[in-house]
Image (cartoon, rainbow, N blue to C red; front, side):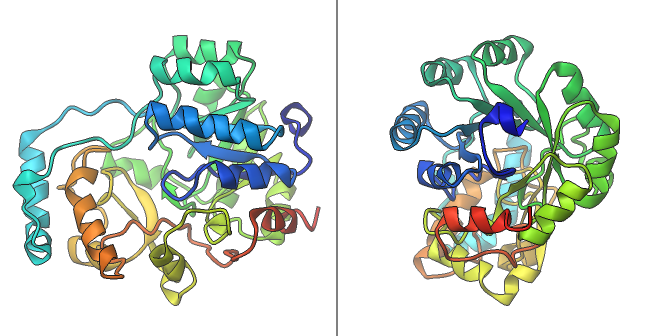
Amino acid sequence: MIERLGITLPILQAPMAGVQDHRLAVAVSEAGGLGALPAAMLTHEQLAAELKALRAATARPFNLNFFCHPSPTPDATREAAWRAALAPFHAEAGIDASTLPASAGRLPFSAEALAIIEPFAPPVVSFHFGLPPPELLARVKRMGAFVLSSATTVDEGLWLQAQGVDAVIAQGLEAGGHRGHFLDTEPATALTRQMGTFALVPQLVAALKLPVIAAGGIADAQGVAAALALGAAAVQVGTAYLLCDEATTTPIHRAALASEAARHTALTTLFTGRPARGIVNRVKRELGPLNPAAPDFPLATAAIAPLRQWAERQGSGDFSPLWSGQNASGCRAVPAGELTRALAARL
C-alpha cells in the first residue's frame, strides 16, 4: 500500500473539515506522509480553488476526502423541538431564532463534485459514512484513485471490501470528530457496537484481505509503532495536528486542546446531528451531549452555529464543537512536517 500511494512514511493526516485547508495537507505530504484535504464543508467553487492551490504547492500524493451521508428530510416538528431546546441560549445571546434559515452546512459527494475533481486526478479519494452510489464510485476508480473508507466495525469493513475499496480505515472509538459508522445508524444501538482502536484493528486485519489503517487515539511514535505491531499497514492521525502551524484551528480551540479540559471528551450530536467527539463544554453539560432533539445530520448546525459565533466573539468556547480525540497529549505547536517525522521516529 505504501508503494502504491507513493509515500515514504506510513502516516496519514486525517481530513478535518473546519480546521484546515490545503496548507496542512501540503506540509504533511512534503514530509513523506499523506496529507488530506477535507471537502465536506467546501462549496464547489472553494473545492476547485483548494485543489488548484494544493496542486501548485506540491507534486506529492494527497488524499481528497468526502462525506457520503444521505440528504436529510427536514422535519418541522423536530426542528421546532430543537429550537425550543436552544431557546434559553438564544435569548441569552439576543438571537431571534425565527430569522435563522435552515441549512445543511455539509454536502455529500455528488456527480457535480466528481466533475470538479476529475481534471485534478487526485491520487487518493476517501469517504466517510460509507461510500457513494456505485456509479459514482466506479468513476472515481476509473480516475485511477486509490479508494479509502472508514469502518467502525468488522461488518462495515467486510462491506467496504465487497464494494471494492483499496484499503479500510479502522476508526476506533477514541477518534475525534464524526463517527464514521454507516450500517447501523440508530442511536440506541449504533454506538454500542463501536470499539476502541486497538480492539478493532486486529479484528479487521484478521477478517479482511485489504490493508488496514489504524485511526483513533494515536498521538505519538509509540502509538504508531503499537498500531503497526497489531497488523496495521499505516496510521491516520488527526487530533495531534490541530495545534500545528498550518492548521486553521481557532485560538479558542487551540487553548482548549492545550488545557486540562482536553482530558474530558464526549460524543455529541449537538453540533451537526450525528455523533462526533469533542471536548466537553457548557452546551454539552447543560443539554446533554446526545440530546434526542437534535435534527438529523447535518441539519442541527443551522440553529446552534449562531450561538458559537456569539460566544466566540466574547472569547468563549461554550458553544463551539472543540473537536478532539481522547488523546490530545500529542498536540504540539510545531510545523506539521516536523510532527509527521516525529510520529515515524520509532519505525
